[in-house]
Amino acid sequence: MSAFRWLDPPRVVGHRGNPAEATENTLESFRLALEAGVRAVELDVRMTRDGELVVHHDAELGRVVPGAGLVEELRRSDIPEVVPGLAEVLTRLPSDVLVDAEIKADAANAEEVPARLAALVDACDARERVLATSFAPELADAYAALAQRPGGMILPFPPDEEMLAEWPRLPFVMMASDAAIPEALALVRKRGGVPCVWTVNDAREAEALLAAGAASIITDRPRSLAARLR
Image 1 (cartoon, rainbow, N blue to C red):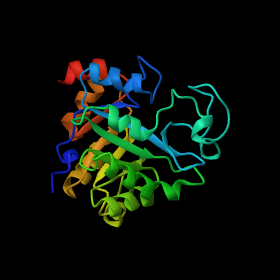
Image 2 (tube, one colour):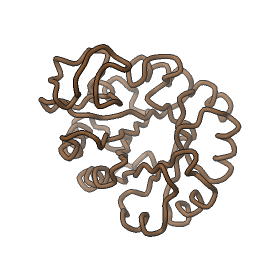
Image 3 (cartoon, rainbow, N blue to C red):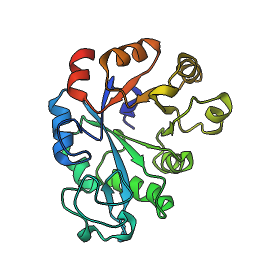
Image 4 (tube, one colour):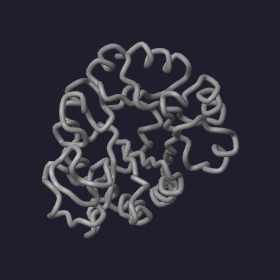
């Protein structure tokens, strides 16, 4: 078995690719993130009515891409091509690029996504480079159990001992920047976890968080942060 490559965490992760320079969660955004010098990207995963996993943040179309309606209620053919399928992203990205796949928890079909994701990741031979995360720990945990790889919980608040103990398969803790206080970073490290922080766009803030114990910084501005933190 080859090693799970997120265990050597990237310092900078492109949040939805490189949204400072291209439409978020598109192939162009991911291309520009890599051009900017990062080797890891974060993206959002939803499932369409006909069971396709697509890369889109919002529950509905319309904010960043044309269209209307809930992604979960639309067929893949009803969704603009600028919204890529996850299989296409994993296939098009170089094999050394790590992917943080956030399972969106607000969809009615969210419970079906972990199994679909595990099957797709295996079909793309990407198990060692995909990290599944979610605001709903049970979704990331379900994927982790199927894939037999660590997952991650996304938190808008500092974690506590009880929460970290409850989800042993989720050592990656993705904290909002205002939740990433030194005590929280130290607690995750103490329990053998990997603290990551989102969304950080200021280089000096990123440097301070890394110095305080953060393993990875997730940013909308990968070009400026990758150059500063190289």
